[in-house]
Amino acid sequence: MKEVLVTGPFDDLRARDVRFLEEAAKFGRVQAGLWTDDLFLAREKKPPKFAFAERLYMLQAIRYVSQVSAVGEFPPTADHGPGQTPAPGIWAVDEAGDSPETKALSEEGGLELRIITAAALKGFPPLPALEVDARPESKRVVVTGCYDWFHSGHVRFFEEAAAFGDLYVGVGSDANLRRLKRDGHPLFPEAERAYMVQSVRHVKRAFIATGQGWMDAEPEIATIKPHYYVVNEDGDRPEKREFCRQAGIEYVVLTRTPKPGLPRRDSTRLRGF
Image (tube, rainbow, N blue to C red; front, side, top):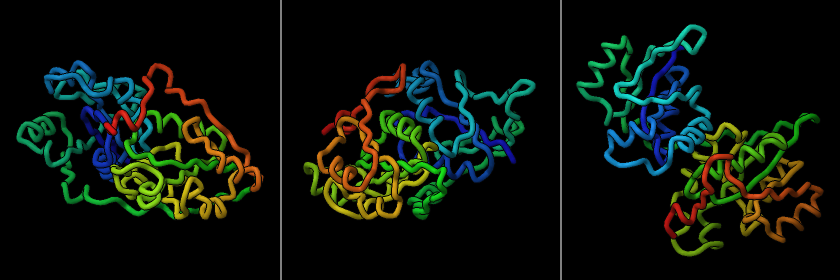
């Protein structure tokens, strides 16, 4: 399989960034060169919104990325020592990165330049079918939420919940979130939010919940038959506790703590309302 180099700041990772990584992964194994904070400052003349450690954590969680390395200078180098990952043969860029400088650098480095067009990045692939591994030894976990402004706290929550078993994530529908939350919610449509969730390597399946209220995933839970329903402190609701008690599902409340070394994130503050 070919090795594919992608480079960039990947600051405030959004669906378009993930779509780019997904398309790049169609060429081979993606090696992401992540700009250091110093390189970001030098090129953008301002610091990144998120520091390198947090950007690294987010990028490493994306299922389309095989390896992430720090890039402290531009042009990036793809020099790997003996026993390390093979040097890439392809450099993937989007249309904004298609320039005479990029072409010259790719030729100089012996890399085949692949341009991922804006048209290729439009829309979101359909979610995988909600198939359940029902083997006796398989433990299944359900979590639910809005996941409107995706951030490192969400990734950490998925990482912790997945420690209990195969993780199925119910994403609230636009209609249900409008009923439950204030005006302006959700900021991102359900297809985009579900796509971001499914892109995280800790998640076995994401699905858009078809029910209503705080137990909007009840129809899908009937199919999944989870052993655990995991929530964080913010998501703890009496309706969920009672549902799990009646259904014989173990209800787990996690303390909301960030990945060690990273700041605590909150969608409301990132979103601005």
